[in-house]
Amino acid sequence: MIATIRALLTQHGGLPVSVDTLADDGDLYDAGLSSFASVQLMLALEEAFDVEFPEHLLNRKSFSSIAAISAALSEITDDRQVA
Image 1 (tube, rainbow, N blue to C red):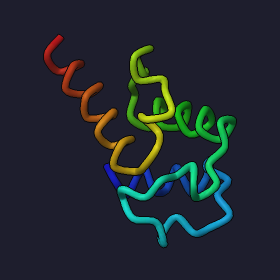
Image 2: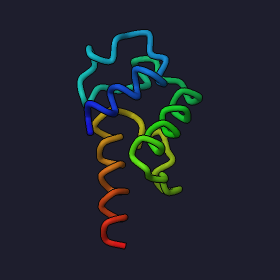
Image 3: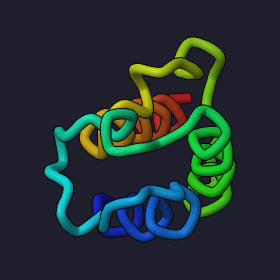
Image 4: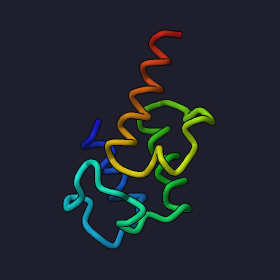
C-alpha cells in the first residue's frame, strides 16, 4: 500500500522534493503539498484502491503524511470488509 501511495503522490502531489526522500511520517504539507494537490491525490487514491473517502476523513490530518494516508485507507478498506 505504501508503495502505491508514494507512486500516486509522485504523480499527483506536485511536490518540489522527491517523494523518495520523505519519511512515511513526514509532513506532506511542509514538503509542499497544496490543498488542490491533496484533492487530486485523494481522487487518484480512490480510483487506485476502489474506495471512497467518507466525510469524516476529508480533512488535512488524513493527508498529512504517507502514514496518515495509509491509516485512512486501512480504515476504509476494513470498514468495507465488515459491511
